[in-house]
Image (cartoon, rainbow, N blue to C red; front, top):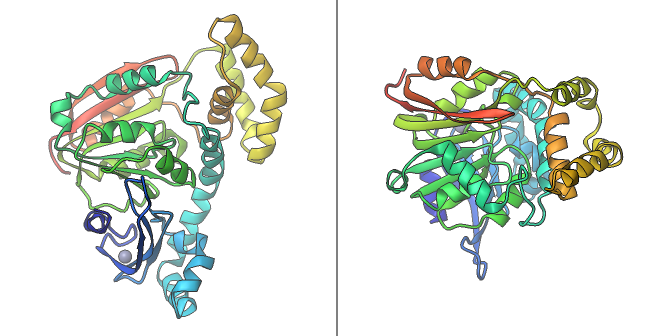
Length: 350
Ligand SMILES: [Zn+2]
């Protein structure tokens, strides 16, 4: 199966097909996927490593994993020189812009080391129910779909949708993708390290694309929305979850605090919140009769205070983005204190 995956992938920079420059397969007992190590190459000169069974398809991946590539590709230095002459500006811009996301969200999701840790204070059953409420798509419709979860984080949503679909791809920009892949091992679900601004898929490819809690953490939410919309096919469904403005004094205080916290190194943030904020939140959750574990509380705090970008939008504004991109049947499916999910079906390619 893994060998066949390559037909669905594209070079994120030039959108051409990829080929294997190197490929090693090692069967792993009791694992649904063999362990693949290798390197993809593109006619444009780009190379992308596959490490721990996960294709690393960021423009800057060959720099991130340079030591490993050097060992396997003879003449790497001259190859690197050619790539940098052609794409150097794009690659360095991507590396710079992804740096803080890799650090903050990579650290945040590393707290989910144990599978039983709840995300967003929801039990497994509540988490599933919330997801199906957001999607509002009958199982029958999912059956033949090729789907993507863009910015999959912990990977739980993408793999749950994969259980209902034909084939699924989950992407994330940071190293949390390794943990997501390890904790959500399914035969029809593939995890890739990729950036939503340079997705490694053909345009207009997916039947369903889910992108939850991601777009508002990019420099421009609408631009990110459009980039992801580009991989939704002519009749495909696109569902996103975004923050909306929240008129609450604690929330406003946290937004004010962000003006400082986004500049503090992530590990120092962790310890500051552990000492000064966590005991307060733990007490509140206990008084409310729903005590939370420290990992759950810390994930919530880091999600609020650590990302460099955090924008809030109204459903009406997002509806106009859908319309401009040729989507109809636009519907807000859930709307709670912090945000809303909204979906639309593409009816024309613009
Ligand atoms: Zn290329």
